[in-house]
Image (cartoon, rainbow, N blue to C red; front, side, top):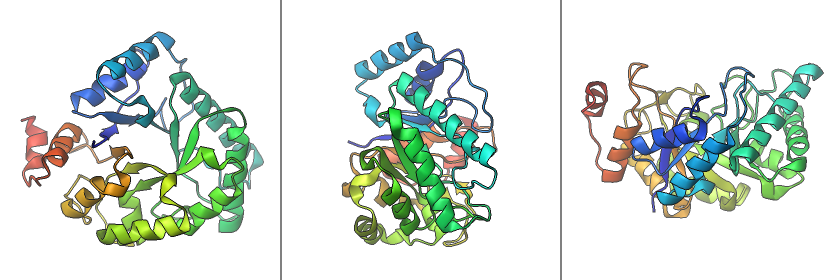
Amino acid sequence: MLIIGSHVGFKKDTQLLGSLNEAMSYGANTFMFYTGAPQNTARYPIDNELTLKAIKLMEDSDIDYSKVIVHAPYIINLANDSDLDKYNFSIQFLQEEVKRCSLLGIKYMVLHPGSHVGVGIEKGISNIANGINAILNNTDVVILLETMAGKGTEIGSKLEEIKAIIDLVDNKEQIGVCLDTCHLSDAGYDINKFDEFLKMFDEIIGLDKIHCVHINDSKNDNGSHKDRHENFGFGKIGFDTLMNIVYNSKLVNVPKILETPYVEKTFPPYKYEIEMIKSKKFDNDLINKIKSGQ
């Protein structure tokens, strides 16, 4: 069965139940969310009653709760320790986010590995692993390292860098990978030959470590290292390549998550993109339909 959804909101008054309802309105059977604003540290308490209502609705709707994903705030940077106060704050803040995942019953949290900002790739990798080891001490949450585009001093645009981090993590059962199609292409991987990429991934890291795929098109040419997402099928990766990834038999039980941009920064595309993906037919007029709400 296709497990597909998108990024959705998580609001103070509705929390997980609101996230679920938004996802279901798009025709999704999974979803991803931040537990608070990704650009700051303001957080409100988890409402257990809303969580239980959401879990019950998922059970009634045949939605596998174990495939729902949380994304860590992008202000966290475990790779740079030149300012120890900021480094330790990133660890502490991520620990709190992991606790929130546990309260919500979420198994997987996607994490950007971070940017070394001058300390070097090797030191950055060590910093990331040390931070993750500290975080995973008292939790059953699995952290998924996201493949990155390689913008600036980002770590994680090469599979070997992801592998190096995993090698330094003590509890291998609690570390995995989230593939991002836009990032992979922008990093220089030829995902037009996705089976060959998966073979390479299996040799370097192991396919069993893939627990989430962000299915985003890219505004950029292969190898551009820019990280600018485009709507599904309307970018430089293209519909056919993305569909081959979505329906790849080696990833059949892995949730696929859309992080494509709102059309004109106003109109969410996910309902329409999910319908197009399910129909397996590219709709060249999709953007106009999204804007008109057809």
